[in-house]
Amino acid sequence: MAEKGFLEGLPWWVKWIAVPLLVLAVFGGLIMSVLGFVIALVFKALLLVALIGGLIFVVKKFTSSSSSSKGDW
Image (cartoon, rainbow, N blue to C red; front, top):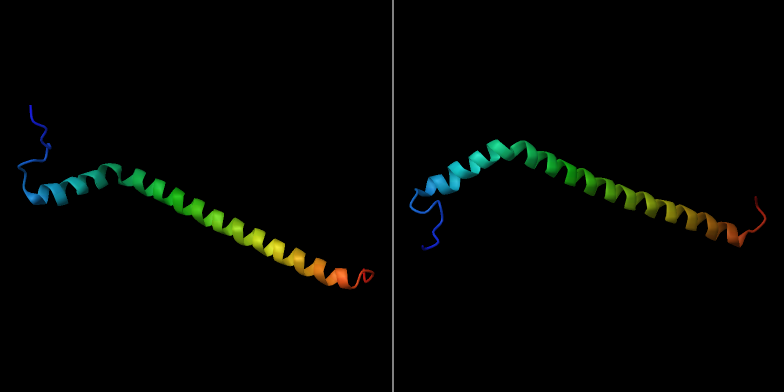
């Protein structure tokens, strides 16, 4: 038995319009929740990198200025 796609012989609009719309209708909420989770995760990762970078910048700035004048505190 030859392997043929189950969409073989159907009009183009069924393959490229109707089937994707049905998939979005059924799994749209799941797709959006996964996409929202991934975007939130990327945002939190970038925020963490920015906060750690800022902390390192501030610590280096204060330690380099305090090392030149050791007894100011």
